[in-house]
Length: 304
Image 1 (tube, rainbow, N blue to C red):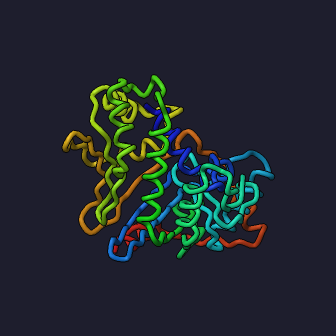
Image 2 (tube, rainbow, N blue to C red):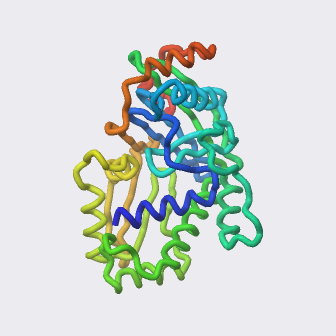
């Protein structure tokens, strides 16, 4: 099931054109706090990264990482979500991190409608605040990002998921689907029913219930965290608050405590490096000052 989940996520973000696996920065942990206001259709996201270092060895790696951090500190629209599958640069501010510019594909590209949907939805993204700081002596960075027209971005994601399911005749065997179960998924895709629903208190993913795929999914989702565990998936699993069976569907819910943002924690113990001192020195040599800060207080302030 892991193969299906990750392929779908990677397939969705590939339309944006400015995404790739994280190679410039690495960190020990990322905390994502998300608030959504249905009245204004605006989502605000706080991203906190602890114990940041360069992803590559040597001075060149530090220079690339320092360039990315300077772009972040100057509120360029460069951000990451977990460790898979993407690092997003909407402004082209970090050349070493950018595979393709954010632009509409040619009219002859069959993916054009979805590509344009994501591009339009992401163009209005704003970085409200960004800072580099030292938390307990370790380099960290914090970003507050605003997503206007958030429901449009969710709708694009639903459309992309629908397209991925409807065009896949047979999923990978590791996904655990029976032919009947996959047939139910494809019928749902053809119906246009949304897979993802977002509310002010969290989000829900719905799919046709099936004992075989669900057992494989849950077994994969909660397997022991090991060297190759993907933190993005592990973070989603840890924050899951409810699995419900409703009208033939299974619903996965990530609900936030009343009056507080949804919180996801992505740890990356296998990827941390012990060279943040070199990165700090590179930043200081480039004239970038780093002040002490309290990450817990920043998170509390965001929730108020």
